[in-house]
View 1 (spheres, rainbow, N blue to C red):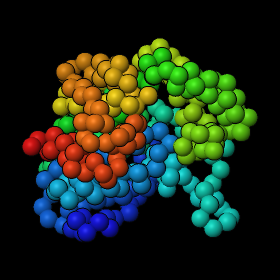
View 2 (cartoon, helix red, strand yellow; view 1 turned 135 degrees about the vertical axis):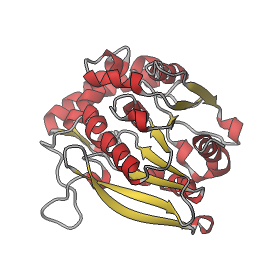
View 3 (tube, rainbow, N blue to C red; view 1 turned 90 degrees about the horizontal axis):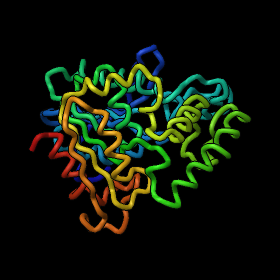
View 4 (cartoon, rainbow, N blue to C red; view 1 turned 120 degrees about the vertical axis):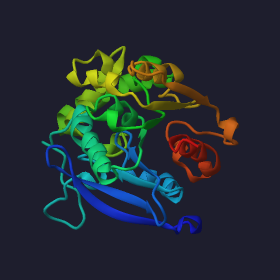
Length: 298
């Protein structure tokens, strides 16, 4: 562990999703007083370990922090019955992106709220993790939400030529492959393996002009329930979460006036940030500190 963070206690835990499915998480606790609770919510096909450095940093600053894997991802994927430390096949595994929000993210918010009921609850959402904020029924429990590269990810609002690559991959490679195999394999370029239902719903949203807002999900009504503070960061070199795409997502939070900030790599002395770079340790004294201070109201 980083010597500067040796005052952070890290514990691997398991907690039940709303339907009882066992989710695996990591709890980061300051050894001193806890002043805030923060839930970090992952991007699609991204395991929680990506957020370990940032979570430790927040804990160092006095936050109780939880990272976790959605069902079918990372350590929340069932193990195989044979072989050592091998994951079970996702063929036949039932899950969708809306399930992740309704069952997994909702439960994580409840777990943190119940455990740290005297502390203000902050929410960090990376990509899909930010989208999920608007879909969960208990988002009113959250005081401040920082969205990192979270967007209404329709291919139309991505930069060229990436937008055409994404559209072609989703519809002409990904969807047929998923129907053939019964899941989305990570080797196809999506990150970790994804359950069939997750990928197909994702592909449907990406292909729609207004992303998830064009769906018929009853959970869309939950966007209007969020009344906390919201700050959304987009990065000028991110081809997926462009400012128009971030603004489309934040427009769904109709009860508040979200703050959208565009950051250029040169603003923080970096050559590149992109869709994932925020979570690199090199940004500890710039991007990390800025988000931490905002979540903690400093």
